[in-house]
Image 1 (tube, rainbow, N blue to C red):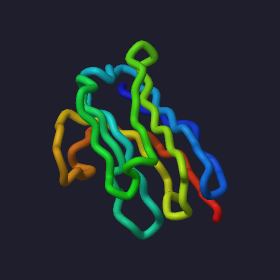
Image 2 (cartoon, rainbow, N blue to C red):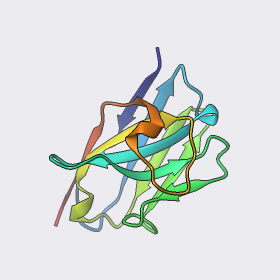
Image 3 (cartoon, rainbow, N blue to C red):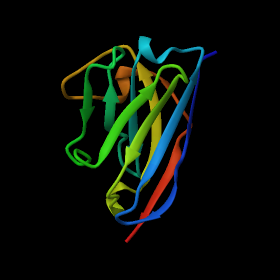
Image 4 (spheres, rainbow, N blue to C red):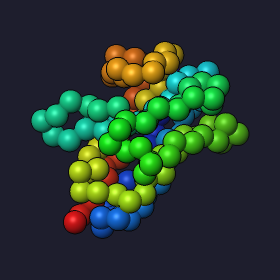
Length: 125
């Protein structure tokens, strides 16, 4: 069965950096749109960044543009999210997801079929 596993979360001070990783099994990153969502308690899951199956297109939420970078290593079948200049409002559980659609906007959880269990990111000010 498909498994998607995140790692790399942790606690960091505002202005710091973290790199999240997402390793997939029984799923090839170049067959799927891969991406990151985040969620805080009581709020809907928010799309953060996505990369198209061919690697040619990426999407970033306005709140993270210029600070976060999504990349992937096909040989390792691993997705990354490099997060810099972290702010307290970036604190959330971050989820990796795989889906088969590509959009220019209006991303939703329904666009994705496979999900990881999440990794917590906490930014203290």
